[in-house]
Length: 168
Image 1 (spheres, rainbow, N blue to C red):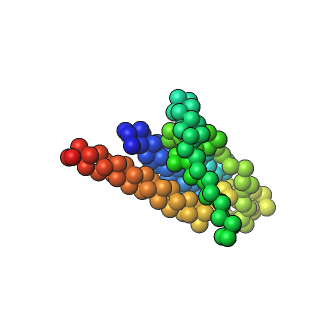
Image 2: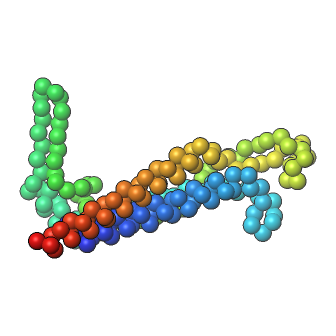
Image 3: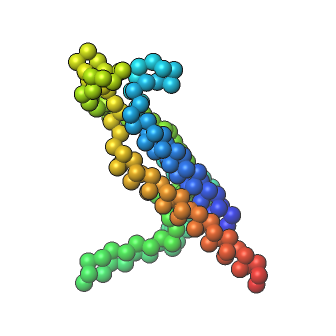
């Protein structure tokens, strides 16, 4: 355990906050048919892409650690294979947190609704609206909120462990 754990939790909280902001923007613009400058244009749904951050020095040490301490057991009766490396790894790399790699506009097509009274309706009476599913957005919001909460719990637990160690 080290202060690096705080950095990992903080990076997760920051990434999830950005995701929640993006989802909120999508929900707020579910009926937007104009650009910010007032010109005609449908809002395009945005999505957040995360990327794990790796640190080369930690990665080399982790590969050596994993090579020496990897334990694999197969239970033929249950058919279970258990691999225990004692460290979270991805292709021999130790994650040092997460970052937002990009916020991209999705390729979702627009949805057409028939509303001839709408000021942005075309000659046939159809209006283009963003193809945003509010239910999906709310699921993304709850997921990001729970992930944010999990990272705060990690930070609090590490803080408590450090305080307990200092009290010894």
